[in-house]
Image (cartoon, helix red, strand yellow):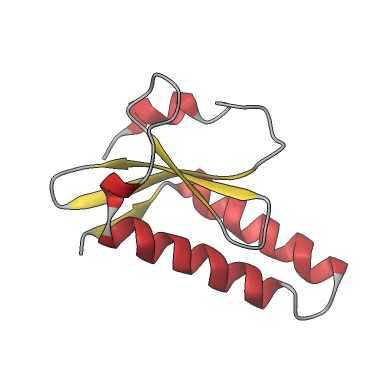
Length: 102
């Protein structure tokens, strides 16, 4: 299992989305955070199981039950999460982050 590194902007996206869901309905943030965590676990276990995104080196994972995608890049001993994005957000808005590679 590879370690998971998360870009600072992706962490912010995750927190803001959790706050949004909690504001929508008390307790809704908990299942959202759990589903994103499960997606991160799947990515860490089997990163090559996910398709590449367009013509980038990033791959994408669909978050269960919520309209979110996790975009990540695989390295030899880790995966780097570039974005935790709402599925309706402008595609590829996060692509500039790829140059911030750890």
